[in-house]
Length: 424
Image 1 (cartoon, rainbow, N blue to C red):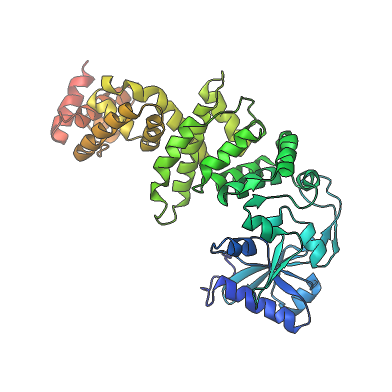
Image 2: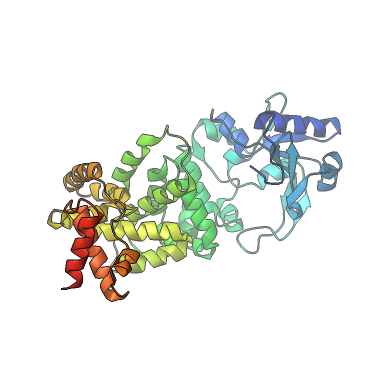
């Protein structure tokens, strides 16, 4: 959890930093445990990247021990403690008041560890761990559910989902990521409340979906979204459930790079858009794809980059089948599209032989150069005595096509062609 205000490199692991913070609470007479996802991940034998602490200390007492701590959800008892280059979220034990907006409680009360555990969403996230000894403190039987690979809402699943409707998608993400079976009462509640996801902030919905698609378990996540009836409210698009044939094949291709370094934000956005394109094609609709792109953009609050990548990938699905009729220049122009390879991956899920042939052609064209620097530009035409106008684009395009096809060896040849074209 980086913070620009604390740029120093960590001198300690995230776990050790949290444990040392917890020890300071203990020395001051307060209870402090690892809480939530970090405990769940350790029990699943995963490596948490962040460690959160739940404590009996109030926010005032937290600040007394760590005067430079900064509140991020102070009205909910949540404080960020900066320690040895690490940032650890510390939250006071609490009991939530009434939920009125399907997102957050109207108020909170000071609680103890039992009430704090029981206010959480799913049993796998309601477990505490003693920071020094590793002792498990489990008031919700989450350890057994982890052992049995079950996702279960704490107590009444209808109440848990009404409290925060985004839990409908969080349930899917946890079940997919950790290969859990959703227990029957929780599954029934998800189905019953699926339509209520429409009332959740679209930005929050989009963020949750990005997290699912960025993970190798993305196929199972989308399968659950479809099978549990969450797709219409996630995408704001009514359509019957789909078996996701394209998404299944696309992800098999995409996960081959799991061991690669963490992709950049731009690459993650492209992957997200590519999976969305396959999903959109899997879902049957009578609407034109252009209109659906706008609907999905609104439903998921897509960035401009994501929207353009999605639109380009879908546009190429309509033109790539005509590849064999393209001139060499048009093939190169098409291959220069930033979404070309992603579109080819989507095409391969439905027309593998065609996509394979196009890929072979692309690799040959790459050796020649897909998008070389144009030999001529507008300034060159002006220096030839031509007047700027609509003809510029026609001449420049024709000259560049000749260059792409290998019919022009140098700028002199390009200039000669431009002069011929200006007289036609």
